[in-house]
Image (tube, rainbow, N blue to C red; front, side, top):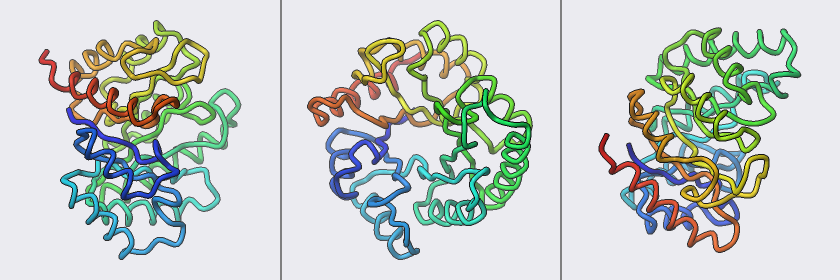
Length: 258
């Protein structure tokens, strides 16, 4: 396993400044945030190449490209093409994606059918380019429950459709652990988020919240996980100190032998 920083964690800073933070904190890689000002809406191949060069110059890798491509979006086909081209520019074989426009409980059968059909198309296009799609688990989307994620994975039935795992603050620790057991074999990347308490969106250090990441990593390791543990957001008070603490903790988890 390796560690990475999602550049969205410091979205108010320039891309190069965030790369310096990642390098200084000892991360192995970064996940470029797919929105301005880290990826411009009028991006071109040269601008992505410049960003990729800045990453390489610091000895970092790109863990995955943090796109916002969504199969139910009206602009899906443009988003799909852009995501693949940008990922190629970053020399990564993983693209983080989204699914749906509402939570799974509110989604119509048409929304599920559209998401599955277009994810098949996206996965096939990605496979032709040697890439894997990584579904973002998130409140307010089709991926907001374990059942929703499994419905998409089973409906699409493509080996290069995987999951970007992150526990939801709305779930209890018992629920988080039970859900992880059901999807661990599908996890490609982890956004290591943690919270002060169940039901609270107030972030804590990864090592201090109600989610026990030592157990999370143990379950994932047993399932064969060898991807990136990523910091996506940091505790708001003294964010740079929080970043250092989170990086140290995640690197410790990577170093623990089974």
